[in-house]
Length: 179
Image (cartoon, rainbow, N blue to C red; front, top):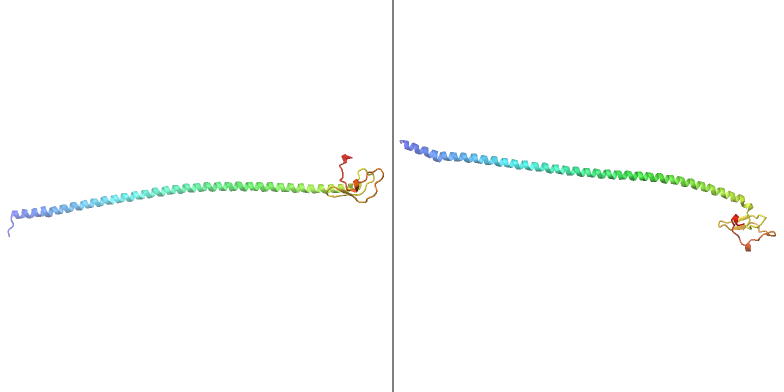
């Protein structure tokens, strides 16, 4: 077999035309696929970065919301603490005021009891000088009831010129300026 120049050119053309073209086409397709893969990776990385940025923004917003909510709760808590302290202070003032009033009332009551006892002793001392008949010159022992009625302890005849008890009934003691 003799290889001629035409045969060599035909073989080269076949290789270069068919096989060489296929090789360059294959290489071009490979570079194209590689570029598309790189572009897809870049796009995915960009989407991932956007997703991370969105997550960070959401977390930041959530953190700010929680911080604002915590601040509101602190303010509300401080308001309630202040109200509690004000109420406690008012209750302490009221308790002190009540205790002062009670002490004063007890002192007044003690003074009143002492004054009533003193007046009772005075009345008891005046008893021999009291008479149910205001015009009577001889003083008869009289019992004074709680209602103010008088009852003579010994019922003697009234002396001449003295007015008897009205109809034998008990009389109330008249004020001194009515004599």
